[in-house]
Length: 364
Image 1 (cartoon, rainbow, N blue to C red):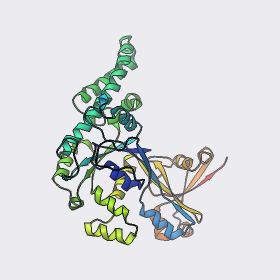
Image 2: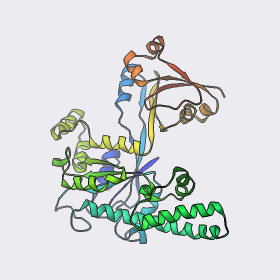
Image 3: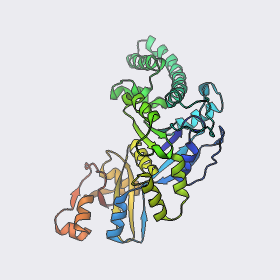
Image 4: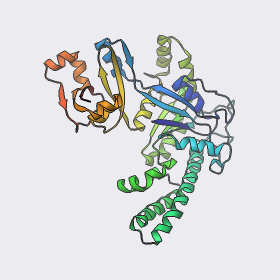
């Protein structure tokens, strides 16, 4: 599962990517410095993993990860191939969620592609380009479906009605994710077309250091503008976060954060939000060899969770032994949890909860 970072040129995308992945993507004060999409595999910060490590004292600890893709800046006309439009739009299509970076800071030394700071205009510029690209995809599909619908094919007629509703919404400037479509119709007719504006989105307001805690007027306007989208808005002083990641000493980093009034780096908040945006959750395995966080989709069953470790575990699944994370911590060990009768044995229908500590029995 991949989340793609998008935005206009010079809003702080590559600097943010560097913060998240320490992959040091080229970050320069001009558009299009990120030509190929840089991909970073980022650890998901999770204090529960640290606590389990403390209790179990394993040989190694492996956190959950999320893939972040740094996509070069879009410009007006990208849907028609302006700038490096087609390539970028193709890169966005391959991601599962969008992290949309908006410039919410004033700095005369960093040029803005449109000459002034206005995050709402910037957001609309990107939205329009993505909507136009989706409209192009939709119209190609609609041409085929209309022909089938004319022959009296009931399924094609149903699909045509859904696509026409999407067309009306996109032409009015509404993203696919905000158009009301029933779950069944979405699954049957919308999802297969992989619309860019159907992907879940998270907005990152890139502010200066002084606005890192409470935001500023630009952030306020962004929150008002996206209120109807059911999307999360995160405030991040990307330049300052980049300075913090350069510090080698943990204590120094903590002091820097405290001076800013932050409990943890904003990048940690963002990574967890991206993980959630991708509809992912974590379960743990805990033993002396290894304590590990495993990534599964929210709603996954015990056999599906076992399959993440190895496909044989899912095929030959017999049962799962499950300890709630809070019970593991309060009793202090697996043995004491068992003594207290807090270990449950679950079958194939068990839906895994975020934070479950699991052990699988299987037979191949």
